[in-house]
Image 1 (cartoon, rainbow over the protein chains, first blue to last red):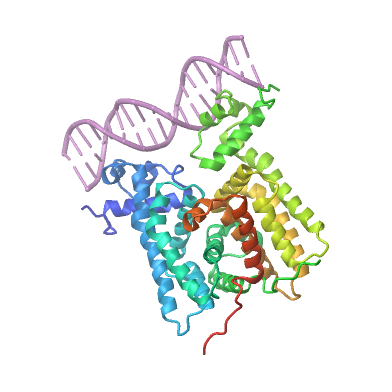
Image 2 (image 1 turned 180 degrees about the vertical axis):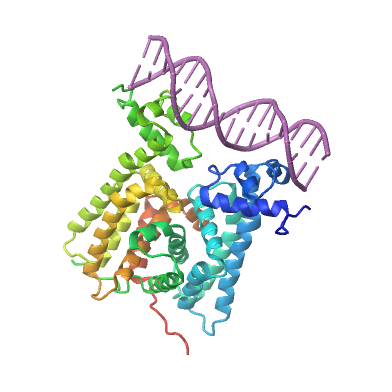
Length: 217
Length: 217
DNA sequence: GTCTATAGCAGGATAGAC
DNA sequence: GTCTATCCTGCTATAGAC
């Protein structure tokens, strides 16, 4: 295995650079030439190590995206395990925190959400891959956790919609950073992210916080 | 102006087909050849009518996406005007309803959200265009409406985050249909969409509906 | 494993006839 | 306005030297 200065194999460098570029521009907007140049290796390397471009893309999800998603899941689990008292509030906060201020670096975070957002809007084989192996199990686990702290008799569908709604917000505030910034004029610095976590937690627990009003009759 | 069977000019047909294809596959995944073939016209037509591919893409947002977004905005406004009593509940419901069961056909809806989701995740000139002319004004109007029904003294940032959260959910439940379907196994038929509107309304008003729990100390 | 060289094709864009 | 024909660039993928 040949390694360069940073002591990374060509395969690793290709995966790293491919992920960055795919996340930034999308599959079709990125050429193999661009990737191999960024990875400081030869044009033929992609075909040698991964067979073709599509396979490199899939491998990015297999060997980069999925493990990171599992790290996030672990982070949520650990946050909850550290709580003396398990509650819905703790759970929502743990999720929001993991996804916005969690173990991922700023750049990792952005990449992570851009990659999956693209796949959600227009799924390829990569989506099947991570949905089956990562997302669905994680989703089940969260559903089980939430079920245990919600009033009995809540329908399964309602339970799932609740989780999806929380995810929807978290995902939105991540992938649509540019739009959010445009609309409210805030940079995504540490302070703003902390306020976002607080907001998502509050909103998930109490909505707008004014309760449901009676319909006039 | 030359028209074909459907009595549409070549320009119109190009815009129609371009929108469908760009929404479905994204800018780079669609070729001019594919568009002109779908529009049943010559390869050179794109360059003749729009100068180049990029300009056709922008024109799709200008002449198709933006007017439709305004239609949605009008729909919300009319729904609210028809209410005898203006309330936060009515407002949230009007938004959710407009975006999920509103004036757009099934296909129009899908296209609409796929186009803007792509732009939010990776903005181009098209985003600037619709952000300035359509999204920001609509957002302001909604913010003003919500401000009038929220408790006084709510910070502007909180107000905006509330609206963005509602949008986040609505957008998510639209563009991530495939993911939602994967996770909870529901098709997006009329009945499910109605339940979604109900859910989004409830969630926005009361969150999980169990109130904020006290931190144990 | 990594390189160069190149095959083979699809892409956007244009020129010029009609 | 619409067509055909064509230019030229850039793409993925492969063959074969090292």
